[in-house]
Length: 269
Image (cartoon, rainbow, N blue to C red; front, side, top):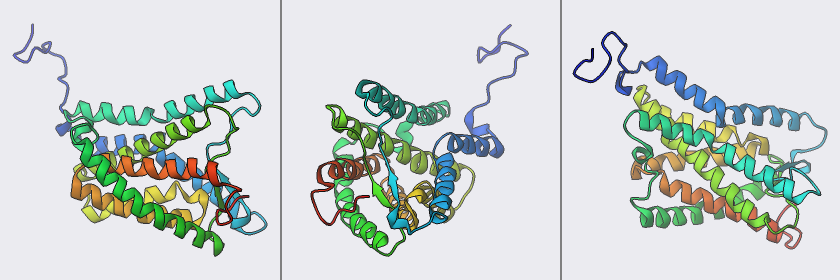
């Protein structure tokens, strides 16, 4: 026998998301973070403790990103690089599933193709402002001994180097902005957090998983988090933030690959 809604009589009906308890929403959020950037924050803290307890100053140590996974074996290395990029996006797919479950989808956080020129224009302008100040702050923090020497890429000189660096930049951007801004703020709003508390939580999380770079990396990304949350609240879209972050990371990864060892102002290990 079936009810009017088509459910089998006697079976427990599926609860709509709006009736999910605060505890369920809280646990769901913690699990999503534990699968990706929350765990990265803990890892970065452990790495930072290791760096500050290592003999010598922070600037004499290096934090390497996008390193070779199979030195001397380029095809195997490429397979590992693509595997790492694709699996890192699984939490984004999970977030999309959770948002679709509540009848919203990624469009609810402004990660869609409805306003491409808005996203591209605002994102490019934001990247230009943050990029110039970010480089200056990094050089200052390293000079003062608050930051490790960041090595954005250490890939071999093979044909797939630059495409992989660009894909890595896109992956970083989508993961961070969808999870740390769009999804996290939506869930914290649903849990009744104040806008200021949500801003603090999102910004501190962003800073935490960059702590492996040193105090400068933490502070710089904390400030970037504040700016991104403010603009997300103002624009209601994650799209421009993804564009800005992608351009910043492409500039860092590809720029380092092209300039390292060729200009005096760019620190290298």
